[in-house]
Every structure is written in C-alpha cells, then in structure tokens.
Amino acid sequence: MKLKFKTIVILLFFTTALTSCSNGSFEPRSDNRLLMGTVCIITLYNNESQEIFDGAFEIIAEEDRLLSLQKENSDLGLINMNAGLKAVEVSEHTYRVVESALGYAEMTEGAFDPTIAPLVQLWAIGQGNTGILPSESAIEAENALTDFSLVTMESGNSIKLEKKGMKIDLGGIAKGYIADRVKEYLLSQGVERAIINLGGNIIVLGEKPGNEPWKIGIQNPFDSRGSYIGVAAVKDKTVVTSGIYERFFIHEGKRYHHILDPETGYPVENELASVTIISSVSIDADALSTSLFVLGVDKGLELVESISNAEAVFVTRDKGVVLSSGAGSLFQLHDSDFKITSPQ
Ligand code: ADP
Ligand code: MG
Image 1: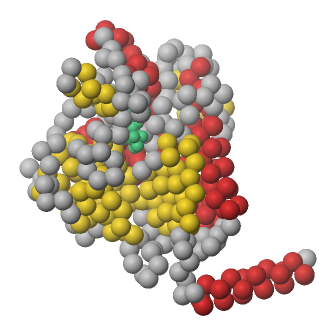
Image 2 (image 1 turned 135 degrees about the horizontal axis):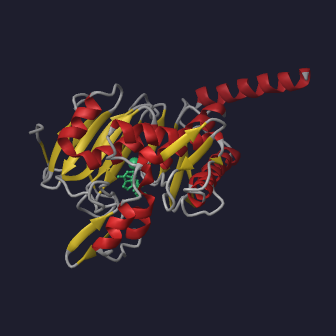
C-alpha cells in the first residue's frame, strides 16, 4: 500500500511538473464514436490517456443500452412492452431520467411529453431526410396515447404505463443526461478541460487554455451543418440546440421536422427555427431546448426567465434572434442576415 501511495505522489508531482513547464497547453486530442445514432466527439487537453476516452465512450454506450427506444431489451423497451400490463423495475438511472422528463412535462403542461413515442414512431423522421406523411386518422390514433399523466412511478424504481400501446421516448432529454454522466466521469478521472459533444449536445469543462471562454457555434438553422450565425462564449457550461434542421423530410414542398406538438400530433409549427439553451446541467438544457421549441417565443421566454442558471437564444423563421435576459452577455451574433430583436 505504502509503495502505491508513493508512486501516486510521484506521478502527481511528475504530471504537475509536466503541465507547468508546458504552461498547461498540450495539443488538444479528439476521439469519436458513432453512438446513439449520432457522432459523439470527446476532446481532451492535458495529454490524457486513451483509457479515459474509452471509458467515456463506454458510459455513452452503456446508458444508451438502457435508454434507447429502439433496443427491445433496454429499460425503455421493457417498460413499453409492458404498457397496460404491469410495472417494470428499471435501473436507478433510467428511473431518474424518466422522473426528470415527467417534471418537464408538468412544468410545460405537456408541451414536452415523453409519452409521445407512438407518434414519434409513426412519423419516423430519421436522419436520412426521408419520411412519409402519415394519414390524419393514424396521427389521431397514435396521439391519443400521448399522456404523461398515465405514467406511474412506483417505489423500487418501477415504472408503469397505464394504457396498452403507450410508449416512452427519451429522445428529447437522454443526450443531455448522458453528457452529464460523461462529465461526471471525466471529473472523477481528474480531467479539468474538455469538450463533450454528443451530436451537438455540448458540455465544455473548465475554460480554454489561456483563461479564455470556449466559443461554441450556434448553427444557422437555414443552412447546411457547419455554418454558424454566431457563438456562445462560455466556461463550464452546456450548450444545447433544438431546431427544424436536425431531422426532417420534405413532402410536396413542405418541411416536416422531428419535434412534434402533442396538441396537434404534427411537427411544431410556430415562429421558431431553433432554440439554444445555455446552462449548467445538460439534462435540463436538453429538455428545455425541446420544451421551449414547442412552447414558442413568448411562453418559452417566460419559462426560461423563471429558471435560474438557464439562458435561451431563440432563432425565428424570419431570421430574428430573441435573447433571454442573461443571454446577451454570452451570445455574439456574427451573421448580418440575422437581427437581434426584442420579444413582441
Ligand atoms: P435532437 O435529438 O435532434 O438533438 P431534441 O433534443 O429537440 O433534438 O429532441 C427531439 C426528439 O425528442 C425527437 O426526435 C423525439 O424523439 C422527441 N420528441 C419530439 N417531440 C417531443 C415532445 N413534444 N416532447 C418530448 N419529446 C419529443
Ligand atoms: Mg432536447
């Protein structure tokens, strides 16, 4: 034991010496994997070992196995398969994410609703920009199953869906939760500086070398991926966007995207093209970005102003940018096609 302790002290000393002599600025190193149906990129800055990358990706894969709607043996798969029949015991993690999703459902009076899965599957709006317009009667039938008040959370981490055919989908919240888990893991490994990017759901850990904030691009919702309207300059924050450009298909000239309105059963049609949330906890930012997208500017702004530590950047379909009260100091607009406007 003694020897081990000594080795650790020496190692620590060595690492500190290494870091300080190079002024804390190693070349950043990124690794990526295709997980959760998206590209997950981890960037580390202090010469960390490959094991840390591998450990982070293993957490993503593990959580996805529990939370995926697609996998039959996932916790979600089991809850859904037993809808209308019985409660299913799930992992503590799954229980917590469902609980949090239901919290947002209540907070938004059902604008965010994790029981929207049957409708999500009917629309089947994937990444390939392909899709078929479902019939009105099918939309009505599936949407009758959207009702978060019919999810019963029982003791012992058990969850029951009260109606046959009901299903939970955590697509609007899971990536944020998993990003938080990766952050927790990196911190436990002593990582102080990192970028976690799970398909655009971003957490920055610490600050950029040179005491600078990180600059996270906010996607132009009307352009192809990689073009930004501006940046969020942040330290130790999460930046999450929901928008019309993520997943969609075009039918007879009309765009159908993947965020659905539980009121109508159709993709949300309001003044918004995207909403970005800047906050401290990614599960909240993810749920809020989807929620605010459904709520629209007025109600969305009202909600985000009532939550401490969360800011919003709304981009409207007519190229306006509406900022919550604390977002002005974090967001810089770079594209002159867009104009910052005050809420109506
Ligand atoms: P992305 O996953 O593209 O980053 P979001 O976080 O906004 O975007 O989540 C969109 C996903 O959330 C959809 O693909 C679907 O699985 C689910 N979803 C769609 N509409 C709703 C809704 N009204 N409430 C909760 N979840 C939704
Ligand atoms: Mg979301």
